[in-house]
Image (cartoon, rainbow, N blue to C red):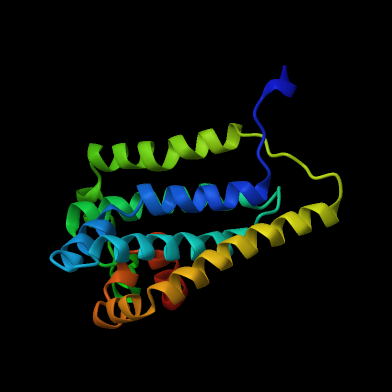
Length: 202
């Protein structure tokens, strides 16, 4: 019976998880980007290029941790953290940086109770707990040898890097101008925003 269960290799799960994070945990980012690019002639192309660039970067980072005993726990932590971040960004319109994280860390118990709600529980359940449970149930396939696993990981890394370089070269001027004039975009990108803020705070 277990042989019939679908299996996925860690190096395939990494870019898939990156796509899920980009698509489902970044609603504030895509809404803001739509406003920024509204009325521009190549706004749609530039938006897709930005999404592809974000996917490629997330994929490369996750591929570095795409080991059978590491990737699942890491993704579960990311899903939980991203669910909480998405809630506060959606509900309160916050930009998550080091100073905001410092404010969160200094919040007392009474203020924390004020922030708790059924809506927060819904976000945490839908975007955090449920994906983590599905991920926990998902069996990971094993390569025949470590060399095959390494080569497969490198191949996926090359694909992600090719996407990143291709997008950067094809839309260099547009992306460079976008990132130069709108620094807030990096504070809206989940999960890199709260990971960077956590590193800066620590």
